[in-house]
Image (cartoon, rainbow, N blue to C red; front, side):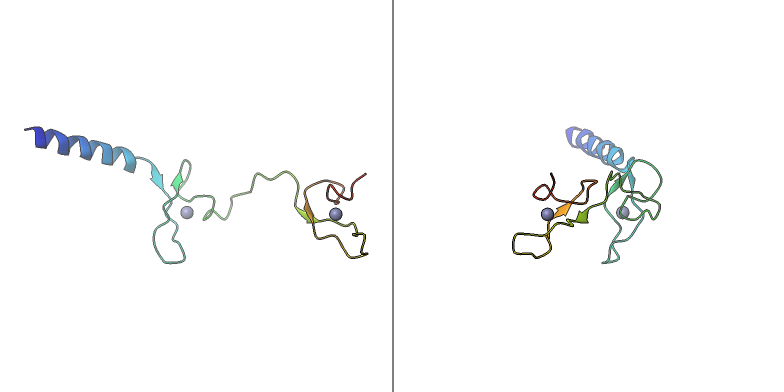
Length: 87
Ligand SMILES: [Zn+2]
Ligand SMILES: [Zn+2]
């Protein structure tokens, strides 16, 4: 009897996991995506309508270094300059 109860619990637990929606998208290996989805059927990786919740776009700093070469630092600051070249 104990064994049966255990099996039942496992089944219940298993169905609880499956109650969450799994992304229906496929990975590059043609395997179903394992991401869990709260809304819809596609995770943010597979949803073409997904918009990243980013505030400012990351840009390359427009400043120049002391060697007169363009700064390669990335920044999200609205000035377009990294923290070394601001102010
Ligand atoms: Zn996905
Ligand atoms: Zn810079």
